[in-house]
Image (cartoon, rainbow over all chains, first blue to last red; front, top):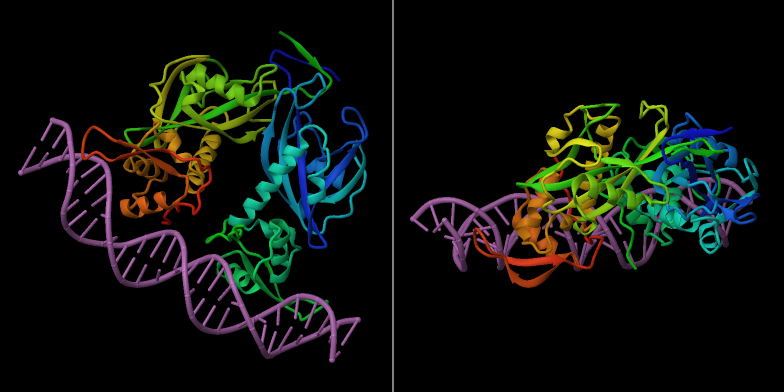
Amino acid sequence: MTFTSDFPVFAVAVDLCVFTLRDDVLNVLLVRRGEQPFAAHWALPGGFVHENESLDAAAYRELSEEAGVGRDRVRLEQLRTYGDPARDPRPERVVSVAWVVLGADLPSARAGGDAAEARWWPVAEATRLPLAFDHAQILADGLDRARDKLEYTTLATAFCGPTFTLGRLQAVYEAVWGRPLDARNFRRKVLASAGFVEETGELSTGVGRPGKLYRTGGATDLWPALQLPEG
Amino acid sequence: MTFTSDFPVFAVAVDLCVFTLRDDVLNVLLVRRGEQPFAAHWALPGGFVHENESLDAAAYRELSEEAGVGRDRVRLEQLRTYGDPARDPRPERVVSVAWVVLGADLPSARAGGDAAEARWWPVAEATRLPLAFDHAQILADGLDRARDKLEYTTLATAFCGPTFTLGRLQAVYEAVWGRPLDARNFRRKVLASAGFVEETGELSTGVGRPGKLYRTGGATDLWPALQLPEG
DNA sequence: AAAATAGTGTCTCTGAGACATTATTGA
DNA sequence: TCAATAATGTCTCAGAGACACTATTTT
């Protein structure tokens, strides 16, 4: 397929920072590239936006192709757009719209799309890898965004399933912030934030004493905010 | 000039929400379009990104062309990217990277670039205009961003000149938030936020009692944050 | 003297952090 | 009975909001 235009021509891509918790550790999905440039390098999943496809539709499509995850399983928000002329060595000018994607219990990664291999990485390891393109920067920005958003939005519940105990929600905060929190203070603050969570009336099952199960409340912004402990 | 590509072809634009204070009222720069589509509609200043030009360079260039403002006069930050296939009626697919630009005492607008006319609008009026493309949405998002950022960053000083009194800084907050603030509490909080402002040793001149002049401190994030009063 | 702006202190209330023990379940 | 998780209360401290008057300058 060939296109022509009277404007400077760009390719537009989406790149995804897909985060989930595995064993109470924050993980990010990376794919190993099968093609040049950066063949065999690890990279964020992503790809080109199609004609007549919106940016978020492209993000959801890549998520489905490269992670096998449907849009009902995740929350997705735009991070920022990266457009340095040198960020992609190919002759085409490639601008990439990056997204942060949060999900609970996302499936084990599988190869798909043009990726030779896909797997979850604990973020501490992923940030030490020599990622393709400017993906190390994008990942760092995505992590910052996730950490910030947990403070003043209810986004943390996106890491949990449809129902969860307060203990699970606390584990989310501890994994993303990398700091232990006091359970009593955490519970007090979560329950004092109107619309953060609501009781389902059910109790959890499994190991340990059953606890009340909650679901996401109606609020999107948190007031008052939870505060990331300093130090 | 004609380009060809093996990828779906996009044009990439930048659009700017340029804010300044005029008579203690928050104003935004709009241009009247001279060409189709949306000829004679008011729009955010902006234009296409050139070949081999980074996104922020394009934003600064448009700012210079359409507002006559150099990069040393403003602070600029990326807002988000808009890419709905229907957002531009032209056959080319146009994705726009939007920016929020804050400046002090920006010059009276002049026509430039492909704008027939340019002028400052109080934001309350601007948001009621039928703007071109999806610019009403972009402007609304830009206003939200500016209001949020004033809470937890030192961005407010970008609306002031190189030195300013605390009274001027308070006027910035009141204009952007649309709420009166208590001067005593405001001073206490600003001076308690490490690195927000630092004394110059100079005093203001002009009407009223002279006050200490401050300049922007080294901090970019505010701790503790200033809080937008509710209600 | 009038208008405009700068500067100062205290009380009260809310929310944050620190901190230990008991309760209930499954293995 | 042990391991794992849930649940509960109090004290102290910091920061936010409410609130009134005096000081200095220009016109």
